Image (tube, rainbow, N blue to C red):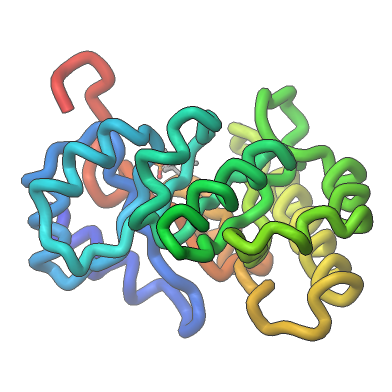
Length: 225
Ligand SMILES: *Cc1c(COP(=O)(O)O)cnc(C)c1O
């Protein structure tokens, strides 16, 4: 199942789009199966869960943190996480920088944009994000590298709505790149597209899709991890 789903998804991804296999709530055995099918990049959204699984799995797995990250959990993942997708406040970015420097690291981070129509809890409003970038405060944070933007579309069947949300994030990305990152090629990631909407994301600027249930099946939120 996992192997087949992975290879099916891989054939759909154009060059330049990476697949983050979202393994939250699935056991290490499922991750191992995907690993054996060649997958090396996984996304988790709970620091402790990630911590526990990582100890049971091969060291060459690249771990992305994709969910809402609490500042007091940053220290758990700072030694090894290779990308943090959903930075939603300046304070979180500052804490990531601080913890990264303790390990002599510079952690790539994406800024989460609120573009969905539905009221979501997390993420920067685009104007807020623009204001923060223009403040230049982030330039002093030597433990992080702002590498792009991330968003989640509304939960809807309306494909045009979803496409317009991805487009809004993509326009933001292009403008920010031109205004603040023209001198570096590090700002290049657009993280959007999940099991139900990644085909739309592929047509609307994504460079990184985060796919869980389509690979691993439905998540069991009640059982053990
Ligand atoms: C769970 C999760 C996903 C994957 O969702 P699926 O619908 O299972 O593909 C992607 N992104 C984030 C931020 C998530 O929390």
